[in-house]
Length: 330
Ligand code: NDP
Image 1 (tube, rainbow, N blue to C red):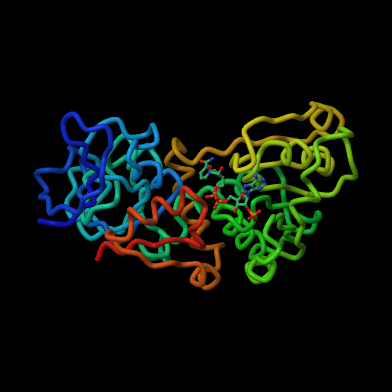
Image 2: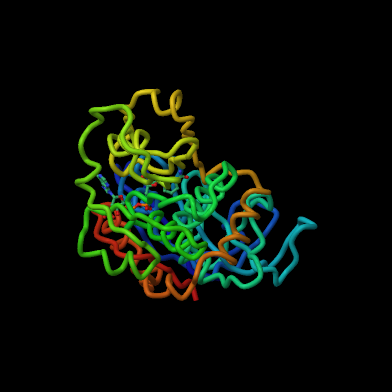
């Protein structure tokens, strides 16, 4: 028997509630690989899945949330994995449509797993989580489109958030000048310690597009904000530079013109972490192990247990969670 956080909705009930249960391997869904989960984390999507209505993501109850987890293979019917292998899982709608990582064991499809690269522990992998993995995908996409250090500052929007913090740390470590956009001036020291060389107040980019082209300022951009800020940034990109569009913290509309694409050859690159193909996942986790200074992330970690999750779920939905929550399934 092992512990699991279950979202349960009794027959006829309108709302689900979180309960810690002792369950057995026989209760787990079918799959090729049984993983002893060591660590998980809390994302915005987890907050939705932990909420009474499931945020439109959870369809069937009882449900085990947890969209990310890392741990050790206990049993495998797939030749790619053997007992003792360290693995990480993000995306594939695990924790939403399928049972996830808020349990001491998980049984999943082998295709969903990635072997943990050398030099990265399960705890560190969860300090990175989907947010950090996505930041790495964004940096890789910019590099694949020609970004190299020395071409000018790279802009990171939503810099004090999960994606932005990790993007700042990776880019700083790789030798880029990093211009970190934040609406929280009190995070300036934190962002500078992560690797930012310049702090850009959010208000500087808050105005809507007045002129489709402004001075060529940024050699690249990791954008977690979207909306009017992204539209404005497009007009400030250097000739041939790329923006990796990751998030919509500031809105999903894009009130832009096509002029930066046509006159400056600017590229807008879409980043999706959920359905990312295996080879690219492997590459991204290997890059995380190599290019993300873990000592810098250590200070961001907020430790938690299964029992803390209902409260943390509510907190992340109201924007009160700071840093990266790492849930110890111990
Ligand atoms: P966080 O909530 O941790 O960070 C978002 C940051 O955006 C905030 O910290 C804030 O940064 C800034 N921000 C918030 N509201 C506004 C606003 N109205 N205008 C301008 N800036 C704002 O989220 P994450 O970093 O985890 O995720 C960022 C985005 O990326 C989200 O939209 C998320 O859904 C998306 N995402 C996408 C993925 C994908 O696969 N494409 C995967 C993971 C996340 P500051 O305080 O510094 O101003």
